[in-house]
Image 1 (tube, rainbow, N blue to C red):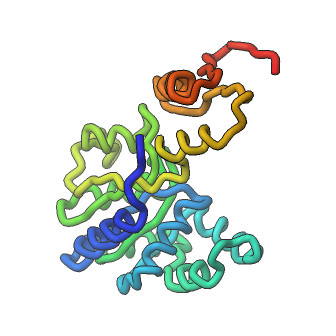
Image 2: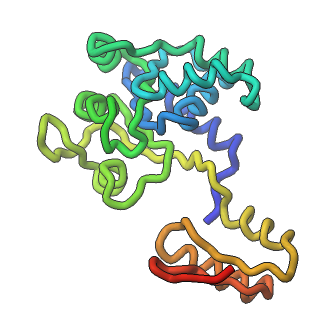
Length: 229
C-alpha cells in the first residue's frame, strides 16, 4: 500500500501532539532507538513545538553517537536543534516526573516489547487525558499491535484496557507501492526479481504485478526455497 503524503502526515502529527499536551495530557511515543526516535524529535523541532520533550532509553546513547558523526547526517543543524531542545531522562526520578506533567516522551521500544516504554505505558495508559502515538509498523503478536487493534496492554501486571487515546502515524522508512513500482520500471528488462522482506501476502502480490504489468520474471520465495543466481 502507499504511505500518506509526508508533509501532511507531519503536520497532522504535530497538531495532535500539541492538542493533547495543551489540554494537560502526556503523549507517549514508543519509537526505535536508532533513527525513528531522532526523526520524531527533529519533526517536533522543525515545527517549533514549544512544550517539554523527554528522550529515554537507548535512544539517548544512539543520539550521542550521532552527535559524534555529524558529517553523515542529512540536516546536522536540525538534528542539533532537536537534541538540544529535549530533556534527557537519566533515571527513575526523571521517568516518574515525566509521567505526571504535560509533555511528550519519546522512548523505545517501538513495539512496546520492552525498554522504558513498557513502564511509561503502564502509567500513561491509565488516564483518558493522555495519548499513545505509535509511529512505526507494529508486527502481529507484539504488544504494540495488541494495543493498536484491541486497545489493551499490560498495566500493573495484568492485561487491561488502555484509557489513553491510541493512534498510529505511518512514519515509514520504506517505499510504498507506488515507489516500488516506479523503481521496477527503471530496471533493465533482463533482470529477475526476488521479492522478500514484506508482510504475508504482499510479496506475492508485488511479484504478480511485476510479471503481469512489467513483463518481467519475478518470484516471492518462501522459507526454505533455494535459488541459484
